[in-house]
Image 1 (tube, rainbow, N blue to C red):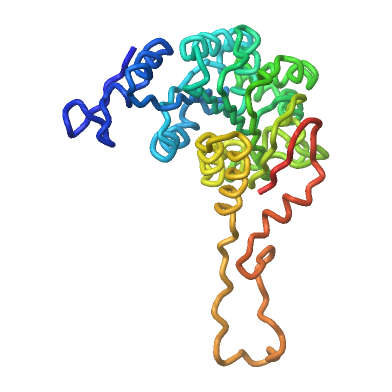
Image 2 (image 1 turned 135 degrees about the vertical axis):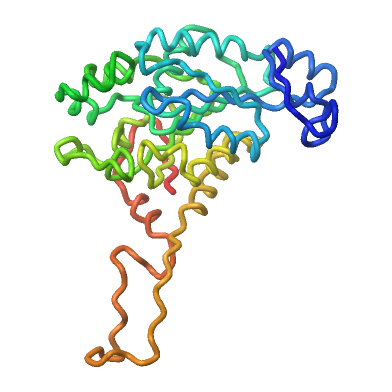
Amino acid sequence: GIGIRRSRTPGHGRRGLPMASMCAGNAATRQALARAGMRVRPTVLAVPGAVLGPWALKRMTRALESKGEFAVHMVDTRAWSLCLDDAAEVAAEALRMHKQPSTQVPVHIVTHGAGALVVRRAFQLLDWEGQNTRVVMLGPPNKGSRIARRAARSSLWRAAVGHGVVSELGALGSRHFAECGDPPASASVLVIAGVSSGLAPWIPLPAGFTRGVGQHDGAVTVREAGLRTPHSLLRVRASHATLPLSEPVIDATVAFLSAPSASDGLRKAEAAAKAAMRWRWRPPLIPAVEPRGLQASSPPPSPRGASDGRATDAGQLASADESSGGETSLRA
């Protein structure tokens, strides 16, 4: 159906357009509006993960609506309590509702965490080939999660995660999730993987969970985020919980989905992430009179990791050796 937005001007939206052209309905409604010459905004389906749920994507959806001018729909698959197959049924129903009869109106998808697994399995339940679609996956466990399998040895962890998709990540190996389904060949896929020391800045992980796994965001390694089919990979310095809240990630997602073409979107996404990740540290002012015992020729000590105001994280991430087959690596 057609939703209703409040507007200061009766019958018109925020940009002076007819209200119907700014509201997002199903595929038949949108096609009728397009034939009538009304502006129809591209659709974005936001599929949250299994732990944080829709809350984690709220900031992302607001940015897509304001910066990218998309009609955003939150698809809560209840992956916290449903298994992967049942959650995929919920996602497939939402995809069927928004499927377009032509490629004129794009339908894009943004996922976080296990939401990528749900969407991949949902693609196997309907014919999505030929749709004008771009998919952004934030921290997806596309090849499972080694950290989750280690954490599953704890009875406390098993009791906390319930019986949803997260419990499957702790019980099943990487091959099961690598083969759970592939995005359609017509879709352009951007995987954004985080690099951090914990699940969140305030939740450090025990050393036993992450020992020897390589670069990770606290839940998924960079290698596990990759797909076996062609895709592009962008690495940013963020944890799994803060990926959808990160400004570099939001800017990259909006740039990728808003660009006229997918290739142009990849370049803009990389540039947006790099611009947002610039190191903003500035050295302190050097006193005019140096303390006694400090030679004038000696430079003042600088904080560990600082580098005269230029981006340091980008260079560190660019030298990483994590890679997966079929990916085009865009490192920010």
